[in-house]
Length: 251
Image 1 (cartoon, rainbow, N blue to C red):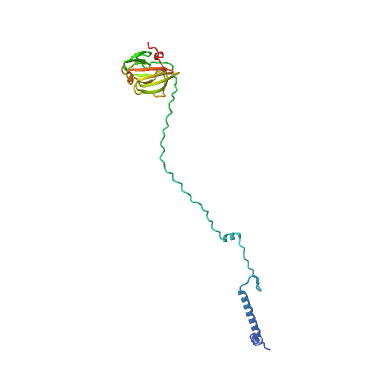
Image 2: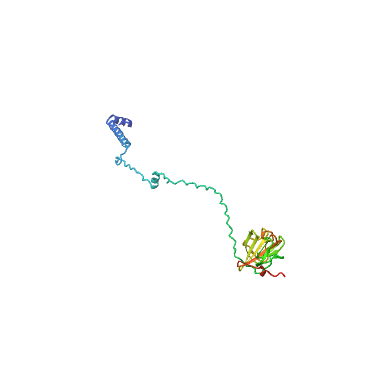
């Protein structure tokens, strides 16, 4: 018996029940495919499992670093810093005028540097010391006492300190002219009158025997009738004494 080719068998199958079987399978395949597409395209609701698939959604926990980076940082509000007050420019002031400090008054305490006496000038005694007897005054034209020695000397001749001591006065006397006073200590004082207007010593100077203190002048009005001379006097404890008792003998 001759067999039908395979092609003829397939045609016979399709003409019979086979057509419906194939049609059913196609419809089933299309249905399954449609259902699969429908279920996969629907958005998943949280917590609802999908048939046939286990879908797990993993939400990563933010790391501390990411959390710190994500969280906005509020800008730092600068605290109110007071603006520095500019330093006041000092106003230049005029330098204070130099105040002259007055020199301390020279000490008038007598300093005894020598007890040796010398003649203040060398010359003739024109008028001697006399406190007990009266002597005629050529200038005043009368008789009076004379508390000192008038020693003749050339105008401008140097006048020496009779002994060491301290100059306690340089005066301009109305009658005796320019006068220098030296305290020799122990109450003994010598005075030199009728000097030139400007002596060479000042108050407070310490002198020794023979130091130059001035020059012979013509300033003593009370003795202007006499030749050029020096009026030399001495006191002890404020009382006039004869200078000849202290001066060395010339001859």
